Amino acid sequence: MANTDESNPLLPNQQPELKDDEKTKIPLSSAAAGTTPVPPFPVKPAAPMGWTADGVPVVEPMIMRSRDQWDSGLCACFGRTDDFCSSDIEVCLLGSVAPCVLYGSNAERLGSTPGTFVNHCLPYTGLYLIGQSFFGSNCVAPCFTYPSRTAIRRKFNLEGNCEALNRSCGCCGSFVEDEMQREQCESVCDFATHFFCHPCALCQEGRELRRRLPHPGFNAQQVLVMIPPNEQTMGR
Image (tube, rainbow, N blue to C red):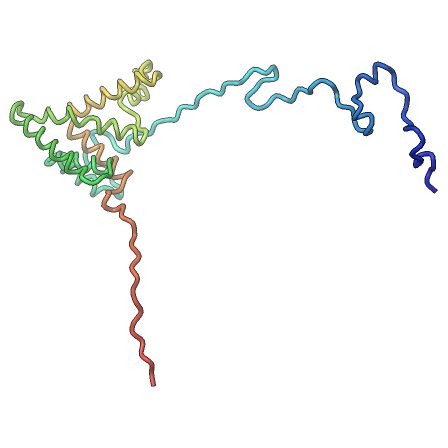
């Protein structure tokens, strides 16, 4: 049989007597519900990730992405003996005989827009003729074609001459650390490479682009051709 004293609603709630200082610490809602008392002060959570125990934020160091090297060297005229060997020989011949065609082809692969080849090949031909007529060499066109090398280097995150020298012999360290100074130094090196080694620079850029980007003519979407079924006759 259940205890009548506990089930009788007329009887007062039987709870142990508390001292005055303990009553102030326990909220009324917790005492009435019989749950665990909630402390009046907020509990400090554990230090999250990225913060120290004293609440000082931890600044994670910026991880610099390493730059890739060029697939072939500047003086590797015939490229490498791989699947692109025939393409490398073609690039070498174009750079020696018809640099305007090679420059237009490189710009077409890099830009991938209609008319890019003509818009770059024809101006290069004009600058080539001006240099040959007035100076006896192709010294005018490289002054306008070096931005293509800078665009290739930025697009594929390739290291420049300053970074290559810093990696090999440790010089140009102050220019490599600062991003703005490094980019200015690399732009000057791109101009010097095109001006003094123009055919080799065009061939190196052509080999790099042919290994990384397909020709825009091969980027056409596949067309699904529906072939109707043969004419069927009912046999007797």
